[in-house]
Amino acid sequence: SSPVAAAAAAAPPKTIVADKVCTTASEVAPSVGETHLYTGVPLDVQQAETILKMVSEASMLSLSGSASIEEQAPVRMMLEFVGDKDLSWANAQKSLQAGGQFLREILEMEGAAYITKKSIERLESLGSLVPGVLKDKNPAAFAMAVYLEAVVDTAKDKLGMKVKPAVLPPQPGEEPPVWPIVIDFKDL
Image 1 (cartoon, helix red, strand yellow):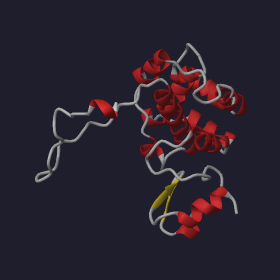
Image 2: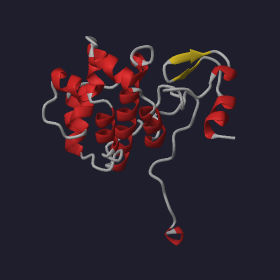
Image 3: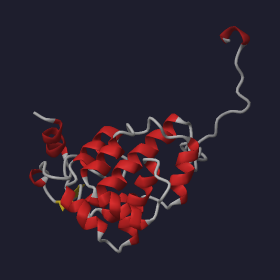
């Protein structure tokens, strides 16, 4: 009973699995690029890493010929992630054509281990990641976007940069808390 099989058994209808929409749990099966469920919420780094490791060199080579800005963005952001100073599409194409070497460079970064506030700022200056938009496009672009989203989410959490949810006002008819709160000296 593998984690993938457990996820497959629990999958709700119309679940996005890597790059296809499944209508039944029986369709959710591990195959290249489809090892973990992606529901539009950042995965943990290990799940995203598994998806990234499943990317084929053929998919990376195909991505190197893409003219889509949406597909190019995660690759250019990966260049920033690995510390490359040349973030041009021409340099990204060379990295994609190197295939396995580029993936090794990405994985050597050990997820969010080396991410700083400045590196997050530099990544965000290159654009925003929306892996859901890439789910029906090149699997390498989708996997890179999912991985970067997971890494940035983990780093923001680690660095205390996550936006805290706003405190909602009480619902109509709901009593607000009594202010100021009074605590007896004995309870301190």
